Structures are given as C-alpha cells and as structure tokens.
Length: 125
Image 1 (cartoon, rainbow, N blue to C red):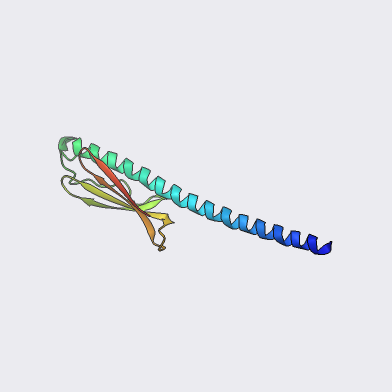
Image 2: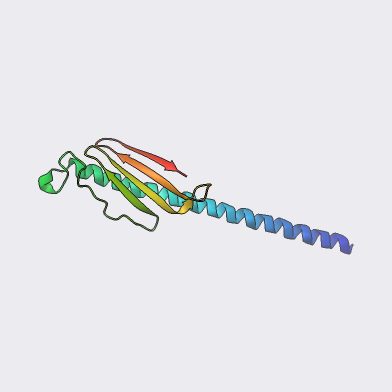
C-alpha cells in the first residue's frame, strides 16, 4: 500500500512539474508575440506620420510630395529601437524588438516600407 502512495506522489510531482514548464514556455511565447505586435503597431503609426509629411506642402512644414527631411518623433520606445532610411519617394523603418527573439537568439525585426500611397510590412522573427 505504501509503495502505491509513493508512486502516486512521484507521478503527481512529475505532472505538476511538466505543467509548470509548459506554462512558462507559453507565457514566454505570448510575451514575444505581443512585443512583435506592439512594434508593428508603432511602425504603422510612424508610416501614417510619414505619409502625412509627404502630402503636406513645404510651406506648412511637410515634404511637398517628397519624404526627404522626414524624421521619427522618437527612435526608441519601451518595445523597440527604430532606424530610418529615407529616399525621396520611400521610407524604410526598421524596428528591432527589445524582448522578442528569433530562433537563433538575435532580436526579431519588423520592417515597414512606406510609399506615398502604400505601406508594406515584413516580420523577421
């Protein structure tokens, strides 16, 4: 009788341990996905601001049908650091995630390409 109880206790501890490990992994994956999603949202906000800059006349502080002169309001947030590559007819903004990592351990990146009437996003995670 005592061996059965001991076996059940050991089995219970193993099951609880596995459940805890799986829960931690799920939480980590969820946190990384949330970071990538937040960076994507911030990049879309920057893209809208870039298109507004493009459309606004130079006399009103805009680019006058060019992205030249566009700058980010902030290059670092709680979610990522951002770099900017500006051309006259396009802007490429790269967000390097602070908490989301790729399989090789490097930071995940989200890249958005902004043109006068289109926006495209790629995620490197």
